[in-house]
Length: 136
Image (cartoon, rainbow, N blue to C red; front, top):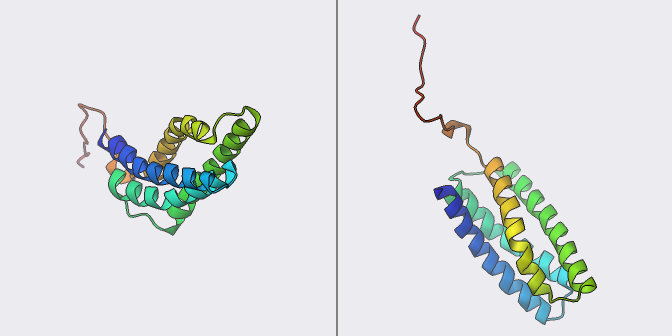
C-alpha cells in the first residue's frame, strides 16, 4: 500500500505540473494536442524521479529511463490524440477531456511502472510459508 500511495503523490506532483502548463499553453493559443504533448512531456521528468526514488526505491539506469519515457511518450501521444479529437468533434473544453483522461492514464501508468521497477530481491512470500533449505 505504501508503494501505491507514494506513486499517487509522485504522480500528483507531475499532474500539477502537467495541468498548469497545459492550461497556460491553451491560453497562449496552442492546439489541445500540442499543449497536452508539451505539458505531459515536461511532467515526465518529475514523475520519473519521484516514482523511482520514493515509490519503488530503485536507482534505475538509462535503459529503464528509456523504457519509462517510451511508455509515457506512447501514452501521451494516445491521450493527446484522444483529447484533440474529443474537444474538436464533441466541442467540449480541452481541459475537461484532460481531466477525464487522468484516472485512466494513472491506472495504466501505475501498472506499467510497478512492472518496470519490480525488484526480484524483494519477492513476497505467501503468508505462513517459510523458506527452507535442504541439508545434505
